[in-house]
Image (cartoon, rainbow, N blue to C red; front, side, top):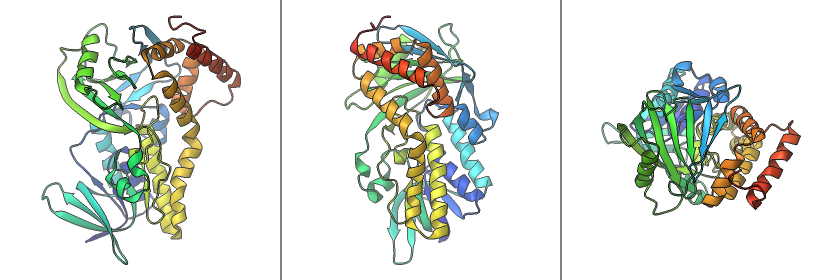
Length: 392
């Protein structure tokens, strides 16, 4: 039986980042990854992620300079990204890069499907099914990081309330990048239309030689494939070659508790750290993995389970305000096509455009620009109440 100080369940951006952080500290760490699974994801990453996590240039397959918001009546509002860009990564290659980097730092990778955790009198065991042989393999550990995504099996068994996290289902199709005038490889299109998604949005995100076209919804009974087909049709992308199709749940709210009080902490989608409104998750997953690694390292060093709480405490201290603002925006504007129409109108405002991308690229609200925030609040109320017409 292989023995480790830490075992991480999940090898996506969060789990791989946690493994890399712990391996750099000299911790004996392993992670279990379910090979062959590519998460449906727009692939957007801010410049701060690229800098903070030292992502090489070759992992950025496109740099987006404009975001186009499209309303239910097909009105288009372009939001230029001044003094920066939105990076796009291909999750298949990006996740593999992060896992390889963790292994190069000293982490051990196992390929298979997590089955269960067993605790004996003096041992904590993690059991998974080996992908190649189909055998049940047992690993021994002192601590565990659960980074196995939304609707995590670990969370359901280890964390009170873990079954109740709200989520949307995201579905996308990877297509060959079209060669037509209406498609701009430097522009993201975000479609706010109840026919595409009654409670979220649709998207067309360039990824260099390919593009991601998809949508999300938390409403049961919605035909995601039919909605994406409609989106492709309306965008003139019906005849583009489809390379693959993927779907998965995306959490919409951080869990209230990220540790079991004994030996386990959550990270990434398992902890619910996807931004409301935008659905952005890669940056928050990697920060969550980093914080989980720091908490586990302190737990091992001090033999104190209270150290496990550090992960959520530090993450929320930095990001909870942004999450609250985005959640309020989603609740206000995603409820109807009339509200979505008003939201797209609001996006024409230069103050909103500037602060939006400043917050996105820096991952925090710009507190020094109080007057601009007050102006936005007034405009927001005016749009919601109808004082400013949706078409203005």
